[in-house]
Length: 146
Image (cartoon, rainbow, N blue to C red; front, side, top):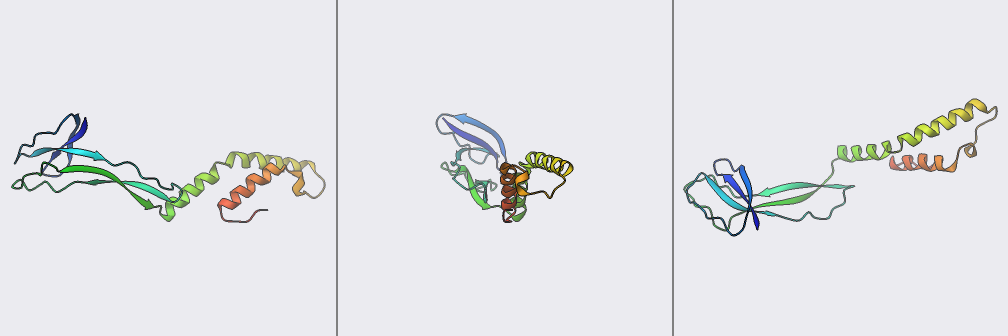
């Protein structure tokens, strides 16, 4: 079984998609044609720095005076594209926001220490796990640990 698409030759758009066994018979000089649709496998890529953009390769079928080659196919593939600066920033902001809830807890503990302590606050007044969370956020921003 293979997937086929019915193409409107005037504009190249897909009218119908269907699974068939065997080749489709081509009706020449007709406004619609069935093409086998090939789906390439997704390539391996680093989603931290790249994204997949789907591509479609299909010949121009609009000239009705030219018969469509019986071996003509429509190929759905992928290009690996670098993320833009804006997309990278969105991903970074999303990673940082994952620790927002933990930061609220840290701030609450810090405020309790401030309110109940009559002495200068020291690093040891907060648990080391709080500092780990804070330093992880700083590292995402490219800043050094505290």
